[in-house]
Amino acid sequence: MPIYEFGCKDCGNEFEELVFSRDAVPPCPRCGSMQTEKLMSACASRVQGSGPDPEVLKNLSCGSGGG
Ligand SMILES: [Zn+2]
Image 1: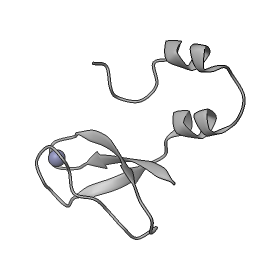
Image 2: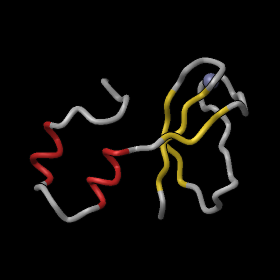
Image 3: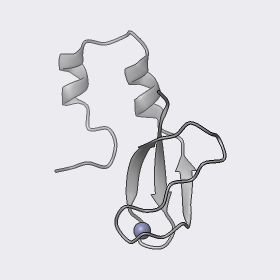
Image 4: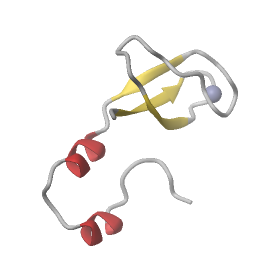
């Protein structure tokens, strides 16, 4: 299933969502705004490829989690 990263234009929150349609835009889970845009997630594309080991990926500071 395709996981895309979205950014909220209202509060700046970044989140990931499973989307089944290219036109589907999920609302912001933080503020509920529909003003979200799909982001290019370079990290996700790397993870999907069978390249580096999972242990290596753990050390990469990808995305906007940060605890
Ligand atoms: Zn928001």
